[in-house]
Length: 99
Image 1 (cartoon, rainbow, N blue to C red):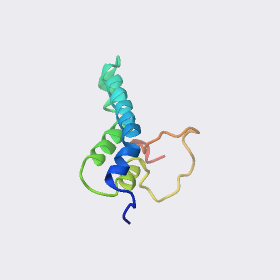
Image 2 (image 1 turned 135 degrees about the vertical axis):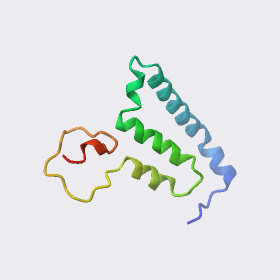
Image 3 (image 1 turned 120 degrees about the vertical axis):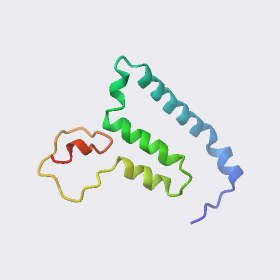
């Protein structure tokens, strides 16, 4: 489905807020790189998913919202016997798939 807004209108309306979001992401990545144990960040499944989502954003293909959502989503179809914790992780952990 086509968006009824013109390119100029979309940019005029949404550029500043999305520029802000990109700066927040850049600050997050900078903080990770400066962390005391920055080498551990790349091993974290959430950071791996985050970087995968960033790659999806710039790959030039459509349906970015759906595809980014799927980067963070649990691809399994079978229900789990029990939840492993009450708080959400924010990304699927393939290392915990057996739980």
